[in-house]
Length: 356
Image (cartoon, rainbow, N blue to C red; front, side, top):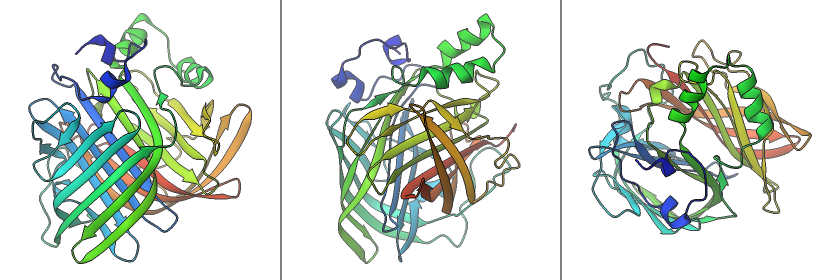
């Protein structure tokens, strides 16, 4: 893979960034991800990470208020699914998911026609590898056609992360030449945008038209991406009732590089993007025993202002991730309260299964 897409920074052409890239290395990845939610209780998550040998790491979750929560059928067993070779502007699975870039950085289309399954709920996995399908899983015909449009420019993690956040994360590590070599080797191109997700969804006999949700989408291009290098992380992605959009994360991958990496950004109601300088959240004090709390508090800082957030996880869907299926993700659908303002979105919690 060209080092331009390994995270070396520099100016990059938007048309080139948005397309799907050649995957020449064993652990390379080209991943696009969308999540969305609204105040009515809708939650939507779709991750499609193209890997070598016609494999996509796929996960899909849809929560419809007063109807239920549904997932892609494969999520019950493993998230390595068969992909279909297609144009450089599409990510496509044999099971019926199609993600298409219509206009770079401005418009995407998400489609599905196939079968979904009832949710597995929250699970604590104890071993790596694929799982067996349980007998009580219900399979349902479904389809959707959704359009994502941007609400502003992208946040490029190569260039726009707060120096304060990165400096704090670096300061707590023992410095060595090896540390900085590993940082360079593990770096990846990653950028995000908030936007709107609008369209029609049909699950069984339940058909909903004109659904509107606030959404975040990202794109990761990596010469090396191995999920089991990460011991734990939490990613909190949500929006507030005043239009503010927020991403705050803490990642721990001590054998690889950082034991505590914090970062994030906000998009103000006027559309201004600002990096988060500090994320005050301790992974060891939240769910280190794999029993992550449904209610917790944290704070973060932006340009000298501290924001205080209360988080309530309404529902969780657990699944395994990575080519080796050695990690589990608990996708938490959440309600937030930030300095008195209500919000909706996700808290995605990851654990390496074994060795933990």
